[in-house]
Length: 391
Image: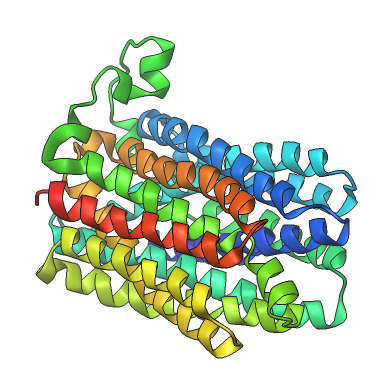
């Protein structure tokens, strides 16, 4: 428990800061007169470097003798760089900085999720899903806290000033990591292996067998399609709510906070339920329910519909991410857990890369068409996992 608490505190602080930057950058770029296509391109670039970085950091973590130092370094670098967003004026500067911060930030999920599974009492589905759900609940609480703070701060401060505030929080995430003990115990026990550079950073190239068993590949492709749809839908949500629906910036942000608030309870609930209904069922339910969110965005004409959409998304994400993560962990070799969780994060990041780009192009013609296309992609992800995954 002593090791778990600092990890959960770090997760809360990180998601308080980092997940707020997505909306902040949308608003900041819009202030500078940047088009919706370019704003979507920023999300695409961040997704691309998340895609590249997650499996690399996961593989490094599986071999690292000092994961405490590795995690701290990957937190400090983007923590310092976030301050630069407040001084930038040109769109290409945002894109370059977004790429660098995304690459280092992509280390957090595979490393911390792998660490959280080590706190499990055994390697059963039930015990593993509970530990993963605790970390995910902390992530969502941080996201909710960040949205509430963002909504309040935007009432009195400029977007640029708020960027400074959240940059300080992002930099402080490394502090609780120093309080962790026993973080190196499993990595240090491993024997060094002689591998070429590609096999070292991308082990799946030389041994893809864990991905091919039991339909794990369908989890990855389904996660890509789900993230493609939901990230595409939300990449312009701040612009959509303020310019198309006429909501204030503060109200738009507080509506988005409903999602992480519901996620907190959803993570805990599905973390316990997965032991009974199995990881596959939870994943499919989460994917199909996510498609409802985009439908509500498409037909919505008031803030009430938006609130309902974010409520359903909060439930859906808890079911999806805990189910998908548990499925990957329980169907992976123990010594490659962080790597394969990194691939899961990477597949979602790949969706984050392409979703906003496609959404931005379609939204320049019609937001309703954009939400509809994204919703169909998410629906197919659920059917894919339903058909091909095997417990």
